[in-house]
Image (cartoon, rainbow, N blue to C red):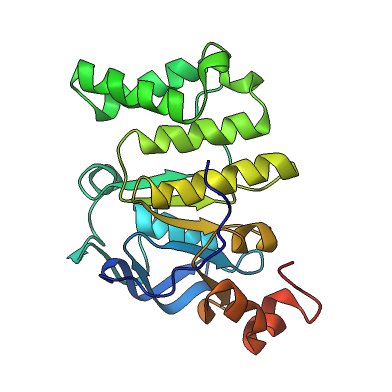
Length: 258
């Protein structure tokens, strides 16, 4: 496993936009959740999203994956307008992986059965599917728990399972919704290492949202803070913590990374 980042990727040698949200607005039950939001995410970047409850972080994920349609605005993936493209096509053709905060696996199936189920959906070639699942088992050190049903796995094991299921389709972009919630310190460290390795070894663009601000800022290149439906601050972890708007709306005056 890689160490947690001692560096930040501030400039990419061949900077390329992989995901762009343009003037995204979302109105739900007459309440404006997102207000003409613009966001650019670069290829092979780890981006963190922060903000109070109800500010629209999960809504952004749902709009990117196609689970929800924006009231206004457009979603571009690798330069293509995907606003009207359905969920399945975004997941397969445009390689979007999504790890929800809760669930994401079948409780009464064993770990290996969950992996096989997703593998059969995405990989038709049996030999290729077998190799991919074997790689994931080795990568996530699943051998001792392959036959344990999902509902009996620990919190960290469940989170690893859902992440690994999202990787079977070889995503270019992986969205992680509150991966650190309700986990112990050692498990959080393990997940941070997995996230860093997804970038450095698998060349995946990762977007993480979580309320555990320190844990999130330990493993991202760039973070944004959302408030009142807009991005009010963007920058490296050090920059974002010092930003007066971010401190006022989210961090408070006493917050420090270390």
